[in-house]
Image (cartoon, rainbow, N blue to C red):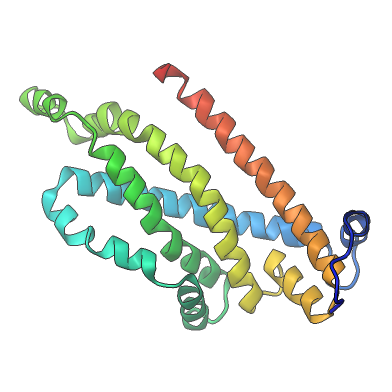
Length: 223
């Protein structure tokens, strides 16, 4: 490893060399694979969090059963969860997704749960009086109420999911951004590591901006 960091010009100049087939593979291939994992894990975690959060808000027994475990789940070191999951699932694709979902779902669940708890009990009482079915209550009352929380969780989850996916890839996958970082670190090539990181961060900024824009458009009715 070099004793000093390479300059910005050297790092940016290295990026084109990583985008073509060569040692360490094509960066685009690795990036796309990581994106697919992020998308799969992120959607799964958000759906689970939404379901669990609404159930906790609707049923006091579910809240009592689940809420004590959420802080515990959030305090378990991510590294431990990733290592154990990767070993149990034999360093497979499912291992990366499972580890990421286990780490990120509790955080999103808390946000969605807090949003669902803001639903006016009087509105629910009126719905019960008119014998409104559960699906209509979910669609017309809960989903609009938790929309800001869910979209806010999506933006937060995007950054969390990326980190966990890359960490899991570093430990046991042959394709993905984590594999790229592991390979170039093993070669002692800090310039290549930083160049790959630059591309990674650039893509993440784009994703965050897209989620923010989508949130503003979807919640325009609240203004």
